[in-house]
Length: 214
Image 1 (cartoon, rainbow, N blue to C red):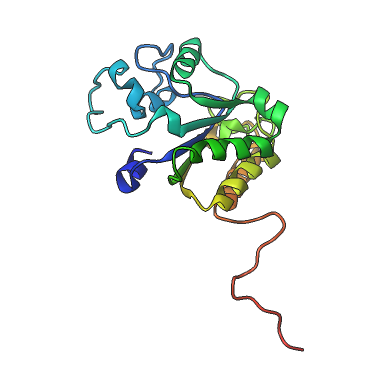
Image 2 (cartoon, rainbow, N blue to C red):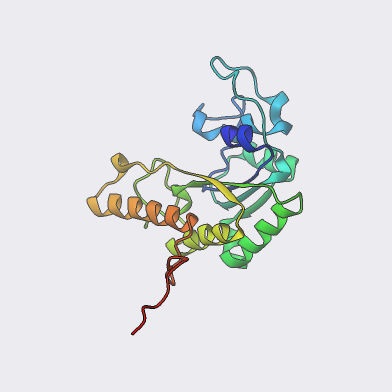
């Protein structure tokens, strides 16, 4: 996201994850840096993040109003406080269940567009998908998105024409308990990326394709 913003300026960010990843170094229970990235990126939290060795290059580049979460279901108390304090737009798994993923995507994209049609960065943690489908990851949480809901998110973003960059993270074959679990995780990740690049489940054809003459 930092590099994307450096290249293109202001972004809208869709963060699809079981976790909020918005702890600061001072609120994190574990000290895991992978649970803190958004606190470094948000302008509104700049005063809450102490200077850390080797991180001076990382400057805030994202406003809280340009961030939307989908799939949250494992959020620390301090993270919940931060999200409420900043008024961050969130669609927890409870909201996904209530509204349906198509409505969630409609509302999420409408929300991001209210601040201008900025390029969209999709950060998709594979643990947003239920671990029955994607078990080969570091911090699985039950009750996640289905395979079809994940594809719907990627397809919807692709069709907006605003999706500018994607990071798909935490696919870890070393954490898979079975060969089938690893294969399911990896193939799901590949399918999500292909959907971001425009592959549609109903099929695609080349733009210049035409039927041959009999």
